[in-house]
Image (tube, rainbow, N blue to C red; front, top):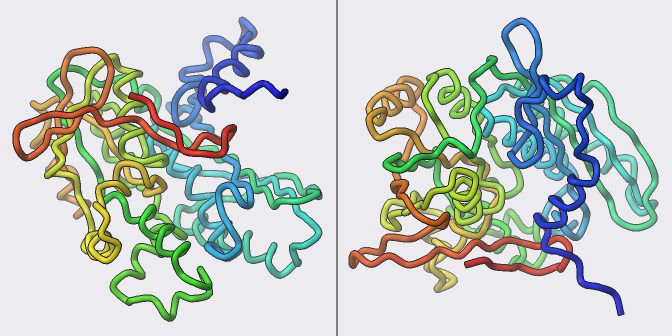
Length: 351
């Protein structure tokens, strides 16, 4: 009988330990290695390199009836740009490796690259290489992004301290609700024209997310102590990651979690609390983080200057690492960490 694999992040930790011997000549150049949204390597001329890599696999990260080829390419690049944003960096270059099954036609492949090119143009990025191979079954797209951040200004998950205020840089839950909507639709992405117009923003947020580079750059340039993470796996999971990395507790005020009118409407239609998608839907690619309370007005001013939304959603407390929700009746309850485990093929939770 096959032995059950470890939980995803435990397996990553095990595998990276196997090859974590860093040559002495390189140790001083690695500022951030495994364990954050991206690696940071010391560069030159006052900047450090920010490097990250993500893979999207057909029938795991996307399905043909929920995303068209253009959107697959767009989102594959967006997820990496978001990781760079979470470190406070600006994306510059990208490489693409793609494994192609025989069932995919050249036109569809061209659309994947067109989707990436569109987003790359928005961020003034250049494609500088990659690899193309055949696949016996599923399409696989791997993107590596190289960005830069001012030396000494990188942002990490480890900087949260007791008394900090927690913020979000946009609404959450839209992407998760958009996926639910597409799965409910008979023809998925082909059925957009028949969807309620007020719900189309949910589909847009799922298929073509907008990584929040601007917010990350504002925070990095501020020079303040900031802990930061991007919303890729959901607000619950990302809050847990900061809490664990910093050794603190997150207390989120449920009434302050920003939700769009579209996700509220869809929640009413489905008779489902839209906060579920906010906590566990993921792929919103907004930023969650915290700053010292004394810097609240300064941060608000920086965001207001560029007309960028900012929402205060809680505070950081002392205690065993964890995440809690503050309910309207002054009660607090644990917010479990949940997410999709790629090696068990199901959602798993953690108290």
